[in-house]
Length: 263
Image (cartoon, rainbow, N blue to C red; front, side, top):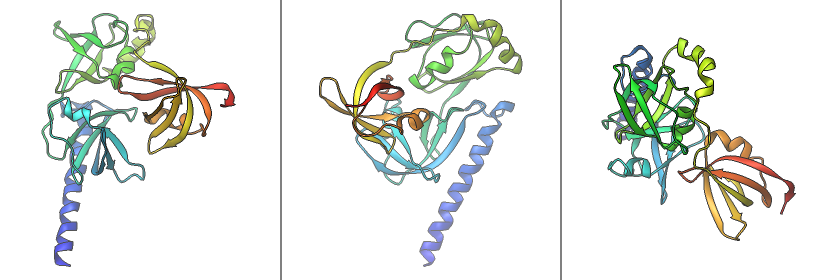
């Protein structure tokens, strides 16, 4: 009993320290933390299950989070294991920005500046003109492409750069920048992106953040579904026909319902 009580006390201490780190991270807008942008949150969770390409993490909110294993693999970080305590950073749209084991050092940096010009088709790269007049070229993580593309050329913005020197999040730099967006709106990068359009028939409705489908050529696949589109995907039933858009991380980002319903 004594050992069990000590174990529970240790867990409470870890969660308290994690909560403090979240509160500290939230102070970034005041310039005290260089690791996050305003609106970013850090969720503390425990790895419950490891699948071939993702980790299931209990964050204490009823619904678990599913973390792609390549987020850490691409950075050369150790793979997650069952029982690991992790810190999941999400942006203001509740999309994954980064994941680290509790206590593990991260090396994000914040860059203040403007887009130097429109982004090329595909939105894979952006050139930032910093406040000191220098230009930096960065690749963009798929989860951040639409946000970066929505920033008008010439508007003040704050970019979050990860350990691979890629843009993982962005926010407007000031209230004045938000007002200027209307004036500069015509200079936004067109929202095209590299999305695959796939005509499908549902084999298994949305469950555990994934949907199983059959394509027109008869092949069966399972796709993870991004959180923001899950309510829309949840209306699909077995044998329903639809058109899904799949991004570069092989996740469903949008869906269109086909007339005729069942196949």
